[in-house]
Amino acid sequence: MTVDMIQLVIAGALGLVALTLATLRWLRVAQREHYIAPWVTIIAGLWARRLTLALYVIVIVLIVVTIVGEIIGTEDIDLRWASIVAIAILIFLPLGLGIRGRTGTLNWTARLRRLLAVWLLLFTVIAGVLTLLLGIVGIAIALLNAPLLVDLALVVLTPIEKRLSRRFLISARKRLQQVRPKIVAITGSYGKTSTKGYVAHLLGTAFSVVASPASFNNLMGLSRAVNERVVPGTEVFVAEMGVYGRGEIRELSESFPPDIAAITTIGEAHLARMGSREVIFQAKAEITEKAGTVVLPIDDPMLLGLAEKCRAEGKRVITVSTDPSAEAQVTVFAGTVTVLVDGEPQQTAPVTISNVGHAVNLAVAVGIATALGVPLSQLAPRLAGLPDAAHRAEVQESPGGTVIIDDTYNSNPVGAARAVQGAAELAIERGGALVVVTPGMVELGSVQRDRNRAFAAQVVNAGGHLFAIGRTNRAALLSGAPDARLFARRELAVAAALDQAGERGVILYENDLPDHYP
Image 1: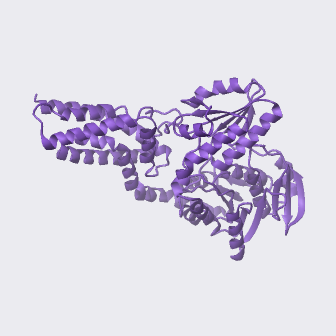
Image 2: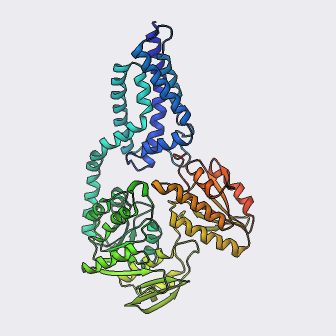
Image 3: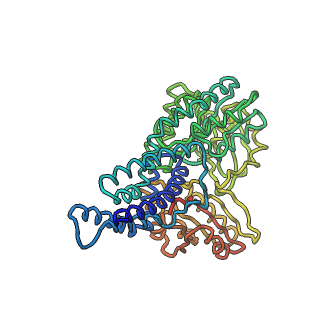
């Protein structure tokens, strides 16, 4: 067997192993990132910068060495072996990104299988062409660009996936036309799921209510919720609507046209995807376009302006607030919910709401109930038993007496600041220590470092101890809390946090990045 043949066999065998592992790694990332390009490449970049940059540099150098060797030619040494070494290194990259996952394993859905087929086809074609042109170094180049090729496969599949999902959407539209429930649509940078739960709870005694489950907030999720849950007799369908860009909520509203539309907040969640708070506002505001009634919290100047715009368009507008001096129709403040009409209080009732929760969510929910004609006297008995949304400021007590606040879902700067404030107040009240366990916040674009630094500084200023998890935001968190304790994974921090907090302390778990983040 010639040297060329030996090299090809070795490169092919190593390449097959690397390809198999790359497939498992990057398809899992694609699924966790909702099949949205270019987020596989973005996540790959995070891993390269945070953990394995030196190894990627070595791989690139080996590829360049091979190409240069092919161009200039060498008699003393066969530089093609450099490509084989590069392929061998790529088997292990990125270090730390598992193929099975602790927080989310691959779910072999029909959509994922289609992605697998297109990804393998693209890889085979591109790797084959590069190998014909450049030799075995083409295999290394293709493997190095595996995340980019997965994103390319996602782009290719986008129109196909839309066509395949259309039958489920048509079925959901027909179901809504037959049953004709009132549709309540809720969006916001945070608080959507909590508010949806409050609405379903408050309306439960007056209407037959169906709410979209969990975070089923896109076209397919809402279609599934309607097809599986909306039945004859359903009077109100509460739809949570998520958004990653302009036009998406407008598309959702075409299929699920809201009778009542509500926005909880305009914040910086998904800022990396949308670019600016103004774009986020524009994307969220689309929910009001088809609605006859709009519920908006006017403590935010953007939403105050939107309320005035909707009123000028002839829509019924219910404004809500957490400011006791606001002339709003619904105000939640200091343990009391008050309904106002034209600035005059009409009804008042006591309310119990978590100190680490968001009163604006309850204000919006009461505003929606008011829009549907439910009197506060009927709502009052249910205000003290509001449901918790899983992993959203959930408060519980450990067997040892430590208070645990689970705020691990979809953290954002405003929500995180509010959670730290509430947790700090609770720690003072109990006379114990405050411990905040967090990997920081993500998807904040150019402000991500500043927001995480400010968040860490807030913990320190509140007298708390910061336990930083992972590497994604480590530098930013340390810049705000230089004495923070560092942990590779959350489970490693749990025991230490319990020891630090003691039986009278408070532990706030703020955000919990899935393990496809470094």
